[in-house]
Amino acid sequence: MNKSFSISFIFIFYCSILFAQNNLNSYKYILVPKQYEFQKSEDQHQLNSLTKFLFNKAGYTVYFTDEEFPEDLAKNSCLALKVKINNNPSLLKTRMNIDLYDCYNKKVYSTKQAFSKQKIYKKAYQEAIRLTFTELEEFNYSYNGAIAENKKPKKESKKESVKLKSKSLSEANEIKVKKEIKIVKPVLEKKTVLEKKQVKKIKEPKKIKQVKAIKNTVVKSIEGQFEFDNWGISTISKKGNNYIVVGGDENFEFATIYKTSKPTIFIIKWVAYKQPQLVELNAEGNLVIDTNNNVKIHKRID
Image (cartoon, rainbow, N blue to C red; front, side):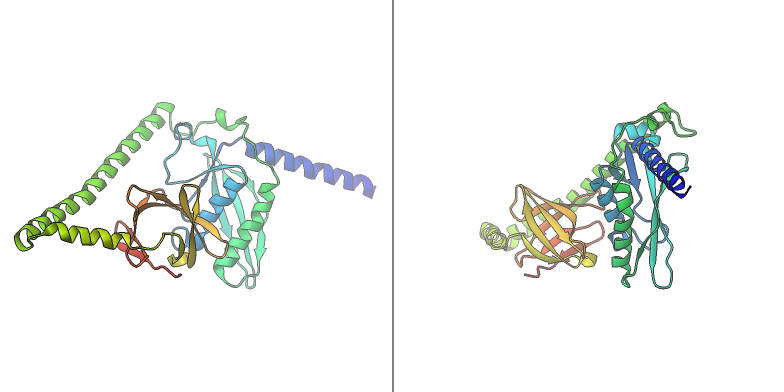
């Protein structure tokens, strides 16, 4: 009798795994928020970036909720599952699990809780999430579209969805153009004022420009170690035609740096943010990033 009970239990267990796997395979995308309910700021402890990275590694197509969506997802939000991470800490352990919700906010799947005894929050959160993902990785995800293609979100027709998406894209482009104008305009004005002053006060302005050009060329390579705020001492190394930035306790690749036509000017694209930024390698070999609020300097360590 015990033998037959064990066989029945194993059969039920594998049936539940197959059902969960087929259910997840019906969805094409995963949406990760920039901030979970228990976090005090966006991507605190790099937990959201790590979640996106692990889902990508498991074979899913993942977007942050504030990124621009592909056309099919913009028309039908039911193609995606939304991620929610639950944090249930105890006195000595950090306990976390992942819930996946569909477009009707119905829970589609919930992982088992994973535990971490690390005392540092960042290490504890990241360890618990990695342990939770071992369950999702065992499903060998492969999209089949069996269920989600037939679903449509509530209170939103196909025409309304396309119209809203078109409107949001046009507004985003308009804002982007305005930002570019705001950035370029004062630079041009300053340049004009400087040129006028140089004409009045300096007889040979060309020599000053040549001195600046020489100063800009005497700089170190962008490759090396730099201080990146919460990531700590991070390493920039060459990868193909571009550069990658790796840091943190998990050696996480959190940014990509692209070359431009100027040897000291680059473009940095963060994993957690969709908006790229300009980076200048100054004469001291430090990175100067022009943000929306101010200028951020990341000092070279080596």
